[in-house]
Image (cartoon, rainbow, N blue to C red):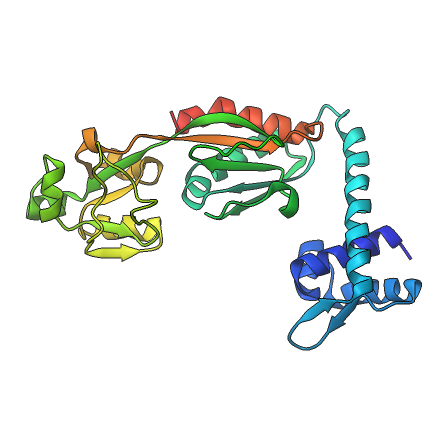
Length: 295
């Protein structure tokens, strides 16, 4: 029995919550995942997982074995990293997490461009507006928007500013007129994002905010863009999302002096380990090329 492999499979099954999810992550069949776990249980003489058709849970022995297995696997990864760091060529899986719109519009094309120059690197890009823990969730690089909380375990590299644009379709402006001041927003049809509120909404000039009483509400920026393109109203969204539409004249920028101040964008990675070539080179690439997208 390859005990280390079985430990890796067991840890994945625990962290992913099921044999099928672990199988997808490790490119195994659920049957093989179960075989690894049963081999461990036979070897240890103790049940590690309690399973039924709906859920699984750790036994006391399983919880202790999981904690120790994670430590062993982390030490193994560090040992491998100490050798890999000697290689000049970046290689291996690079796990990146980024906010949804930023990730789709900027990080995905940049990651593809980076990979073209480093074909031995496999990109795993996860897009989510939730702030993830790099250590607990196993990410190599996080790209985050906004001011950073002090975290002594992370290195932050600035890659640009996340800017916003206020815009509308030519058809909408022809029907409703072009707003010249923020006071005129009250008379316009405004599109809103459902996660915005008084606490996290975008502040315009001074103390003004994007109207809370919007006529079209959605939880997805791409959908709001489509609504604006079809004349639904004034849109406030990241410049990177509407840049092509503005260049092509499908959308028209308005109230440019009132747009929110840009928020800083940083690439972060752990500093408690020697950066592997794939991490060091990718973050350097973002620093160099990111400003062309987020200048």
